[in-house]
Image 1: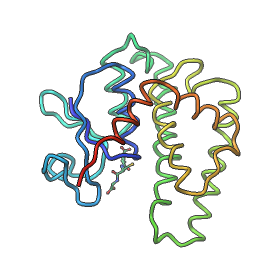
Image 2 (image 1 turned 30 degrees about the vertical axis):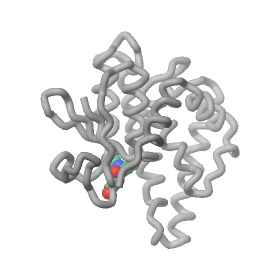
Image 3 (image 1 turned 30 degrees about the horizontal axis):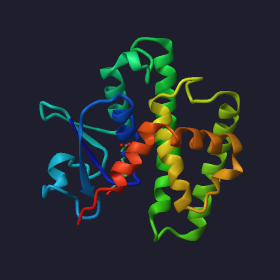
Length: 204
Ligand SMILES: N[C@@H](CCC(=O)N[C@@H](CS)C(=O)NCC(=O)O)C(=O)O
């Protein structure tokens, strides 16, 4: 398998999951501005949508969209229990979380990367994110992980998104449980390894 990634982006979550599962994979860095890969290909040929993450399976199939990639990986190793089994009631709870993370947190934070965003619009996006973080704070004050007491794919995703707060003047320490959650996940060996691997690869 190959994971097409760009450092500090949402592709960190499948990267973490690949390492949590001990799967063998190759990392291919993408220049998100030029839409090229580090091995000299046009990334638009790989994902015509033009964004990471993209996962290339051994038969050449390309899978995109973070939540789909996360579930695909978790299902390769059901015994690791990074996602509840298909057909179980808990599976729908996980889908609920992945939809929330994708549409409310990921899509809620993404506009803040736009340096031309008017200040007033930025404030509105921040205010909405604060409300969503208040909700997450309530959940994580009662349980260690999104699905309960066990780390899973949704946590790899939320961990990754919370890492963007430092770019947007969102002070995560304001939410004690959420901040503790991020620190706890950040200490996992697979997470450290993923950060180290992304930082140690230069391109361009
Ligand atoms: N809908 C996609 C969005 C992925 C996405 O937003 N990727 C960003 C990095 S976090 C990206 O590569 N953006 C580059 C671009 O849109 O040009 C998903 O959920 O996986």
